[in-house]
Length: 125
Image: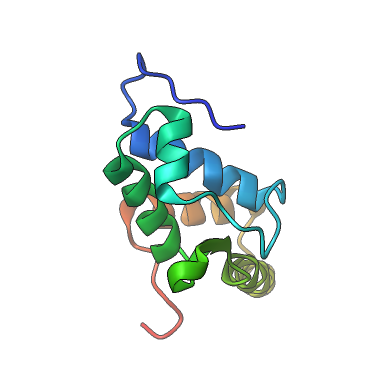
């Protein structure tokens, strides 16, 4: 169930995007699940269609959903693939940390700094 808090300082599109992303990540919405049309969801939530459209576009850019033209929008398998890739990268990182003798606390601080300072890079960088 999606709930939009009109009193929240968080914009409605972001509330919707975050709630759908959470439902996809915790498998409440499973791979292949068809999402409501933008107009249907906008009407149900009493939001503008552009607001729902923006949330869907951001979810699609993140690889969590895919739009198949007139067939609609569906939960994508790419989100699960991305999670598996992150698990593999974390295991590799843990092995490197252990091999160079960095303690767990410092290893976590390194990751937090990379995530918050934007210094995280893709493997191809």
